[in-house]
Length: 275
View 1 (tube, rainbow, N blue to C red):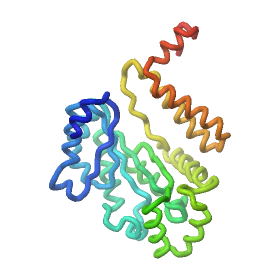
View 2 (view 1 turned 90 degrees about the horizontal axis):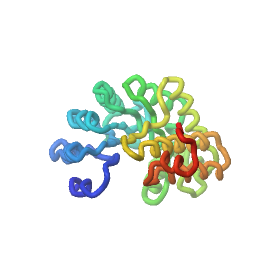
View 3 (view 1 turned 135 degrees about the vertical axis):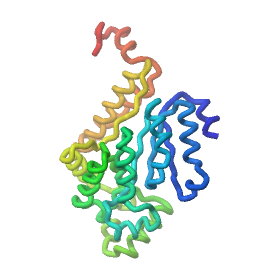
View 4 (view 1 turned 90 degrees about the vertical axis):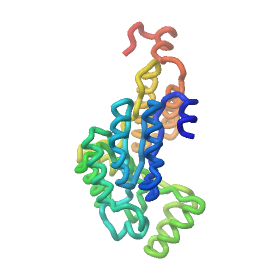
């Protein structure tokens, strides 16, 4: 199915992964990587299982041919007590970071998907710095963070777990979310700025480098990347929402443009030799 679908679309970054325990026997994720390699598609792998290192040969081959990156997901440092509450059956955090180190040793871009960050549970500076430090110490080059959104069955299940294990936090969640699917106010801005500060301290990034293929639209994608990063900077600076949306819409427009923006610039009266 994947081979058929990829034959219909232009080459771009695709997400693979899902190394469930059954993967040891069925090797479906490995087959997906084989298809991506044959078709020349770069891959983005978001994973918790160290089993992903079994397929390092394919990931490295894809990286040599186009591009590959592997992110390891966690909400905590190596604290087993909290992990047992929220992820009782997932691989140990320390095993994820050992796998990260192995991935990095083969020259493959890797880092941490620090998400979701759980309010009042995994958002302490101690936990955040521990995750950042472990990422750095195991060869990761970035920490990509995300907040906790609550809606539908996922919200119902999560709040039950919190109420059962941390009953004192229930009113805090009511106040923070106010019936919405994400935290209200400036909560996330403060967390994101703290992550940026700690990433800077440990010499890694708080954003993931973007894969951009060489070709006629390369400059468009590079400009769009800079604009998207600017949007994030503005969000963290709590700039005017209209200004943020102006940059976001500009990034979308240039990213989706099907003509070389340099060509448009020169033919519409721009500089003869634009940078």
